[in-house]
Image (cartoon, rainbow over all chains, first blue to last red; front, side, top):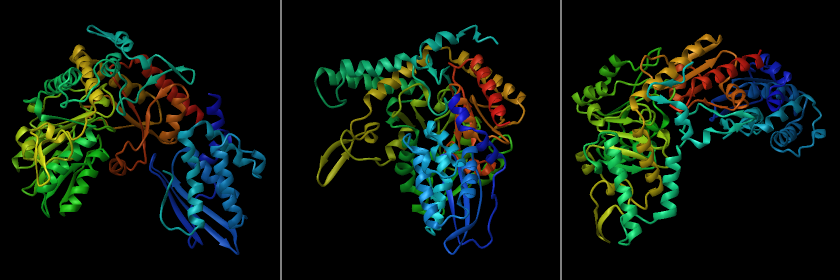
Length: 149
Length: 411
């Protein structure tokens, strides 16, 4: 039950109930769709990038608390980052979600550390990583839907 | 709540299933995912063990003692299967990997060579992917068309629409006996009668029905019946395709190899008669032994008492869930196998699954390999409780308390 409390921390529940940057952008610089065939979660991500700086991020989709909160937290963290920094953040989050040895010091955003609770639930890692994989697809200007399977 | 009926002692039944007696995450296991796979009684585990310890050898090959013993046991199970589903002849029962392979076999060997452009295959909106994709694959090749029977709000087939879809173009009606999501038991005898009236053949997916209903393929009148062992207390990797003898005789083999031939020359091969024509290669012999033991086990129980007990469990779970505010039940047909799908307005089924698992309760959450049904219901996923005769009323109470807990977590 302790693991459950770490998974569903207040910050996660808050972002699930009130997702930040929820919606669409009319003329995004890039966008992508993500899909998790395991559970049917789907997510559309829109970014406006100006002179290599991410200025606006919006997402839309439906899914579990973990996938929604992860997407919401991600949009907050991305604003102001360069494309290169965003890609680096993806790598860090990937490490955070999958490795017990991950060094929390590497994450400048304290908020994103709540996602570490997912590690105790291997079946849920894909829920948390969906938004981040979709981000990579968008940044690479891929228009095809990505899957976390 | 009384957990015992006159002829049914659930605690004695539970003693037959070793896996049930353990803790998960510090709580006693409550296994409510029986539509995904059932647990195995000790007699099934022992039958597999006994085969490998005592008489493991290949079937239909050797003239040595062990091979003869294995062959005899293997064919005895075929006879057992025939009695279990009331098939007229044991050679009509083909051993396959499971319902999926059975449907692929009949789609490819019977229907594919007979399909012409514009022919129609009727499916229903509640089919599992395994009873959709094989038909799409052969329809695409032939230029045939899939027609889909819709369902009503309570999860029953719209039989009037089905009747209108039937025509002289209909070659095949492929339908599940019981839905793995809605629980609905479909009126197979009626469906078959109507299909036969236009000259169509009927293929039934029995994956969800065979553990819960007495199966009588002759009374149903169907042409083919597919089921998996692992959903009826047998091991994974073994299942059965039953087909009418004359249809099986008309069919080309599905796979080529050993055991399915009478004679092989480089310019001509003569196929073995059924069932061996469809059992190329060394089969899953230990799986067959497990299947035989599972059938023996089910027949050793009072089947009517089981049906009555499972119906009571489903009724209890349904009424308890109805009392919990915020949950909606998906599938409310009056005729159901013990499957209970539900959703909550604010809690995603995956979150429900995780919260229940933390308390030792195993349920399924997701689209249940029925994405067209989910689209039809406008849902991404559901949570699903699926019951077996080894479940108890107390376990349902535990599950309901855990669902209350999920509501607390999600405030």
